Length: 106
Image (cartoon, rainbow, N blue to C red; front, side, top):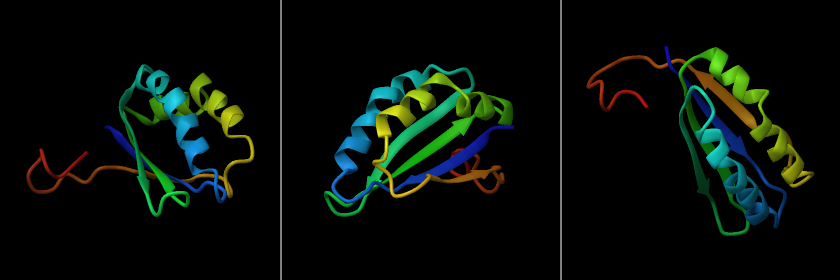
């Protein structure tokens, strides 16, 4: 069963552009990881004080675990340095099929 991940990343003040650029450098590699069905970067908030949100969908918990231990995230950690307020807030969720299948799940 696919796994959905919602991650919220909070940059330090004035570092949102650098954090976004770091994600843009690794996102293509994440898309090529086995089991990646979706890895979409979103921003919210005022310019310069944005939070970043990543919506992910993986084929399985094993694929998600491989992603978490993979080279793209290792490289991302090096690119980010101390640009974040703290660790990302990560929510791992199982889909609940309800209503129209095309509209009721990611």
